[in-house]
Length: 331
Image (cartoon, rainbow, N blue to C red):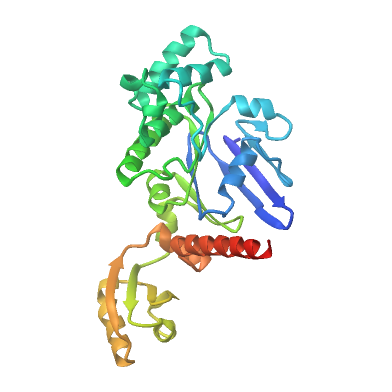
């Protein structure tokens, strides 16, 4: 049996299906990534697995315990780093860890030893006696990771662990996550909407969209399945004509367009770039820029959902603003 086994897990909020019949397993010691835009259902899955939400239907076992029948046992065997900070800012780093360890029943001597271990793991021993209110954002995240590990959990849940951090700090957090996965041997479920984060950290990744898994495999396998190279063109004007022209070419494996951008997948991309530009030129389409690269998880997401992660995020923000505006008008 895996560290996590999920079968047809579903969660509805009135008319909204947040998670729709999701099935997957996570092996012991695996680092499993849940990748998708805000609102895709990632956090809802986590909240069901950690017993904060009750599923509408379906079943799941975490660390061998049923999330409905054995809630207390599930909670004893998991660690959690929530998306929102949950530290006591008026306590020191050491005191935060000590209090959390006491809640899990560790003796005084066990607490001292374990706190030293986790502080060393996240490189915060020299800041142990500093009030958390004086920690940087990255230090707080590292302390939360240490706290999630304090009681030797079998499964650790990281919900958007680098959200809001700068690029350099995010990279450091990635290294801590990798290190604890290897040194502690803990199974990790990571939710993120950062493509590069999921690609760098995950043994396997599931891409979520509208409450469902649209793809699940090793990041390298998902990218290889795209086949060939990716050419991205920025046009002067709309993309419709060029998309239709490229769809008719037998050497184009797939093509998508959004606003003034066209993305296509081909074999031997460096040889096809001149053909694409020549095709556009013959039909009076002006190409402003061209980019050639290997497929990424962003391309995988685009292939399965029809939009990029960024486009989906922008659309979600616009929808929320429209909803707020409508509510204000009705008041």
